[in-house]
Image (cartoon, rainbow, N blue to C red; front, side, top):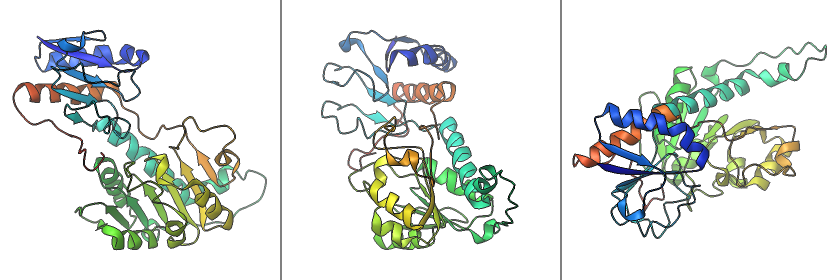
Amino acid sequence: MINVLFAALPERWVTYEAPLTKAFNDLGLDVDLRIDFAPHEVDYIVYAPNSPLQDFTPYTRCKAVLNLWAGVENIISNPTLTQPLARMVDHGLSQGMREWVTGHALRHHLGMDLHIKGQDGEWRDYVPPLADDRRVTVLGLGELGMACAKALHGLGFPVTGWSRTQKEAEGITCLCGEEGLGKALSTADILVLLLPNTAATENLIDADALAAMPKGAFLINPGRGPLIDDEALLAALDTGQIAHATLDVFRVEPLPVDHPFWAHPNVTVTPHIASETRPSSASQIVAENVRRSENGEPLRFLADRSAGY
């Protein structure tokens, strides 16, 4: 019998119990899945970083912590976490992010807000350029960033991607390093942020980075709130250096009602919905990692503590 502890907010247990049970059964795993094991009995922890469980010291038998979120920045530096930590990478997350990013990229590219918000009797004769002439930059070429870069390339946009280490993808200009970042920003008519939140990426999009972009560029952030210097972005929006920012993530969530982003006419706020973990597909990833561990195979999507994600 494999003892699996589900450690997340109580409302998540309601949505995950059945799909996790099915996923374990489908792989022929003999699993006891609960929310109330004694720590010394636990073999695996299915985990959300906002769980009350923050001290992993008593879980001496635990072989791995299997995260339900793509982001691990809120747990990876926990000094009590000595077990392997696996990130969540699944079809549902990738597909959801592709849909949200391409939808908002097309919205800005086509100038849809001009007509959606402008139903006032004025005939606005605006013809957008073709995608061939609108350059997109994606910062972050992990699973989600690469999925979005490929989708945007498929729509005809010239796509540049930037990452900490060199990546390769057909049809996409892949850059890395400080010099590569400057080049990536200089061609970002639309900038998509899909970097993790680390010490190296916090405030990466500051006044200098925004000034390096083409005037009138669009910014889309479904990655992490601290990637952006909020004050610098507001200043760039006020001058027209940035035409519009669509933001799904923030330093404080929910975004405080008095935050200037709410009132700014050139900011769109969405409530951290760009990509949500779907219980059915996420459960399959969790079950597969348990199966791999029990068979002596390496876990998939292990977090890199030295890199912070």
